[in-house]
Image (cartoon, rainbow, N blue to C red):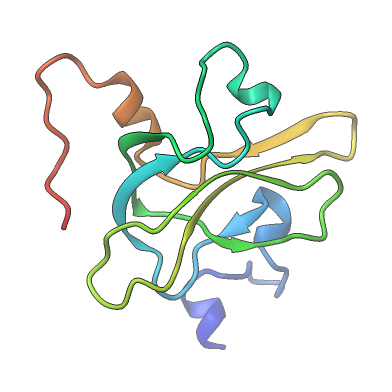
Length: 129
């Protein structure tokens, strides 16, 4: 029941990570960096990122990391340990998997990712510690 109250499942009891590849867990609130885990994946083509390279400040505030590994073609493209208020036990994960109609389902796993990528020069993201 507690999981449903927090939105981990839809009202029918289905696991929402099966739609997006991951879901928000108990300690998935905070901010941090996007850290590349699969630099050879086509998503990173042409950007010269290496495993462990980071894009600062694009993860937060509510982020996904509770994975649905049983999806076809499931891959974790980025993962990090955001700064949170409390124990640092819940990693972020950006995921991708093969959809049922020949499509690809991508989840950045973060509500801030576009803000960090499109911020105008001189803009400072909210402080996170």
